Length: 190
Image 1 (spheres, rainbow, N blue to C red):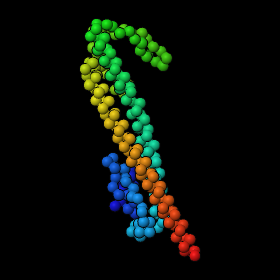
Image 2 (cartoon, helix red, strand yellow):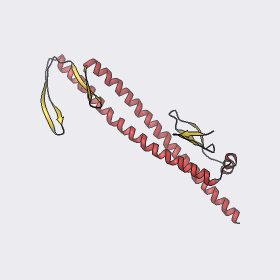
Image 3 (cartoon, rainbow, N blue to C red):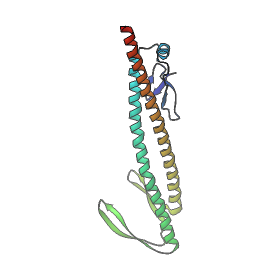
């Protein structure tokens, strides 16, 4: 069974199946001579294919690590926004205005007073877009975004765990095939 990783197909039956997010699962090569015979391949070709696969795993691992890092930064921001909405709602219930500073530019802030009757908040949606929401709508949106971010972080961690397993299995298979080749060449010389 061939697996695919990106646009390329992985030959010689090196992969068997894939993860839930379509990352190929490399097969552990237990019996090297039997595998090479079944695959009908030369040692150098299989080693080259495994090394290319290993590089793809490592590149993808870096990519997923970056994505996970970005999500990890986003989660506390969402949690802080939720806390601020709770605080503003509490101040409104107590009929107290809120004095604050808001950022105009880097290192430039302005004083502001949030009226006790205010029940709206502005949320950045990205791409320099801000929308005004009621406290309830903003809280619902942020809770949804927080849940999605936590699920995505978990998915990235699962991908990283899977990739680490695949990297180790691939490295072990490369070492086993390489050692088999050296042993076979020594035997042929004798």
